[in-house]
Length: 285
Ligand SMILES: Cc1ncc(COP(=O)(O)O)c(C=O)c1O
Image 1 (cartoon, protein in one colour):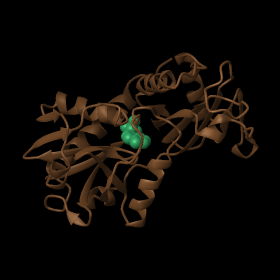
Image 2 (image 1 turned 60 degrees about the vertical axis):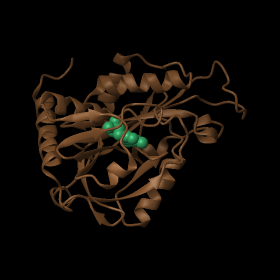
Image 3 (image 1 turned 90 degrees about the vertical axis):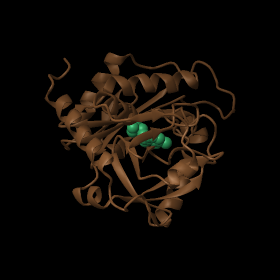
């Protein structure tokens, strides 16, 4: 079951006018909210990031937090999986084709869910493969825009090289990956780039930083050079669906020992504990 502009329906029945600016220009923003045992994880943070994305492209938020929470809850209840990715998208709406943002449109609101499958025990044991590519995307990667052509091109190049991710570098610095944030470990210290217009402020990135702080794991939030990425002892990618996934080869060469390293294994375990605690806590009314 999906939600479109006020109605719940099977996905086959959902129709969008061809002049929707989401279709014509990719003029919209989105969120993906992981839901474990039918309970959304970090919902308030996802809704805050949605607000920032909407503000950045000047779409009035069509719903308040309570209404969004209700829509998410109804989508979760209406779909069969215990663990779900709840996808929500807001576009500017339908208008005659003209680049400048028209005023007064009714935003298109769409929610759907899919099964959330986190990395298998097998993949966590071997780690994932990645390639390094130039980050040729635009300069507002902090907006969670549905205009994802650059990310799609980069991810396709990774997939064609038999890799799970493309890790991106711009002007000699690591930014993020095509659909995840990136952390590296050197001599026991975790390094990750600060939030800026060049990366998406990941919700998982924030959780990982909280975990590092709470467990006194040495870490530095500062620009990470491409040379540091390439000589790292460990590399991890983080996202809502991949959680904390070790990368064990970069451009076909082993990262560190070529096996998931001890810091990443520990942070992955701490992340699982963090999730369990959230799931045991009383549900919001
Ligand atoms: C480009 C990009 N960076 C980072 C992330 C990770 O964000 P989150 O941890 O909120 O899933 C994503 C998630 O899809 C992404 O698309």
